[in-house]
Length: 249
Ligand code: APR
Image 1: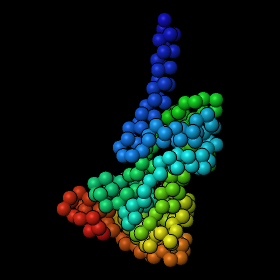
Image 2 (image 1 turned 90 degrees about the vertical axis):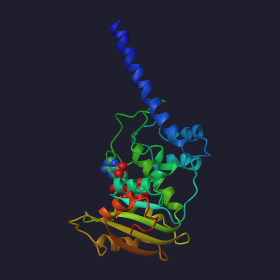
Image 3 (image 1 turned 120 degrees about the horizontal axis):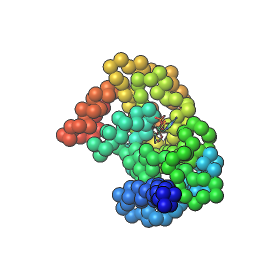
């Protein structure tokens, strides 16, 4: 009897794992109007189910990207690197900018881990390879692909919140540098406005060498601008409902 109970509990946990990932995905998807979330889930799942979790190239998510097509928000698109918490706190409180994680594309799996397994039709949320364990890992390829899609439609004035408390705010290994900036197209993007977030003892300013590389990487025709902004100022601004969009820096 004990064995049966143990087997039942383990089976229940395994089944629940997959279902709860799917239901989180669907719930989050349904926050956006006008999408067929079951269809989007199906396209998403196809990328990795039954595959070795280290052999999911970013192209595997192409059908998901096509199903979750989204309209660009010219002038409001916000990119970031090493400022995750601050930037999302800001976009949550103030409806000025949109990050990838605020769109359907990124929000459905934000902060989640998932992968498949060869010979299985399930989605696992534990035992998946970590970000740097292998190149073509399920989660990393997703973010690479979704970031590429987000950058492909970037238009108008684009903002990037970078971290002024590190020596290399524009790091060539980051998704922002290796994928997004490379895909900004001067026929759509007019300006790149860098908000370099500084703290009390900041080590970096807008003359930083890595930011010179950023300017070199930009498609000719895209104007560049950089502004140092204290983190405290960003917090103050986002917590003050009276402050209009665009007055924070
Ligand atoms: N291990 C686990 N997660 C990682 C790792 C890692 N080694 N490196 C990156 N990530 C994940 C984390 O979730 C992290 O918060 O990617 C996120 C972004 O990493 P950063 O290095 O801070 O920034 P970057 O690589 O430039 O990516 C941010 O990509 O998500 C898009 O549009 C978004 O502009 C943004 C950019």
